Length: 89
Image (cartoon, rainbow, N blue to C red; front, side):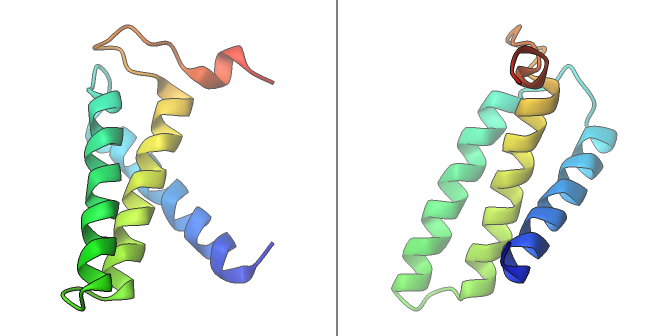
């Protein structure tokens, strides 16, 4: 795997673990996924318009990936979604 991608994934895993400890379930994980995805789009548009830089976009990608990992591992107890990891290979 590309070293930059490996680093990105590792950072997202660390951020996911930090978020799980700091904000335990029950938590609005599904809503947080949507919020973080929107932040990626906003940062990417701002970067394209030269109002942000690539590091800003990268940071938002890490946050979004972290929330997706959390959704996969924990689910969303507020909405009654069990961990996806428990129901897949």
